Length: 248
Image (tube, rainbow, N blue to C red; front, side, top):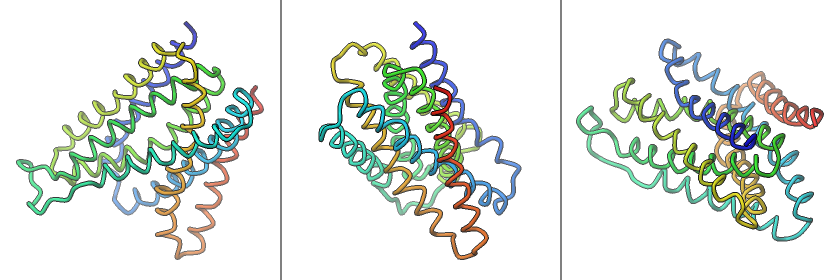
């Protein structure tokens, strides 16, 4: 019962992150970009820390040090690579309007829904492996979701949706995480599920940090001060993940 309570509470909190876009409406774009870069740096460190300090060691401790765990990590990398390809699948040459929302926005909704569903699977599986691991995984997901959801909100508005509708659609896609968590908990007794999903989550975290977040930081590293700030936030994200090991 505690696993259900922790899992559902965590996934609802993660889903509510989708509404963070409303807090950015009154912020100037220049200021928002600076804030996002700090969040992205911190999230990258948190994801890498979550993968290498918590998820992978937990998988080796629970299921042994074998090539199968490494293959599951690589499966996570490949799965998120495919998901990213789906998100950027199509382009449209018809001008964007309220009557014709840009397909990029529609594909973003589809990709975000699948992504959130996988996040739900990962959160549920992590709680099945241990309450502390579930909390750590939830924190890592939240760190990533904040800048991602702000970006998703911007894509939907750019794609022709009103701000109100963009928030609603973003929240609805976020609820797919709840479905993922419920599915894992209902099927929790299936042998090998946590064995696969914990290292799979690590692979997903590594891919997101290495392929999506860090390249964004490298696009804006021309000023030395900015680079130092990004490095500090990156290491801080890792440090936060490490500090969670002291709670056990």
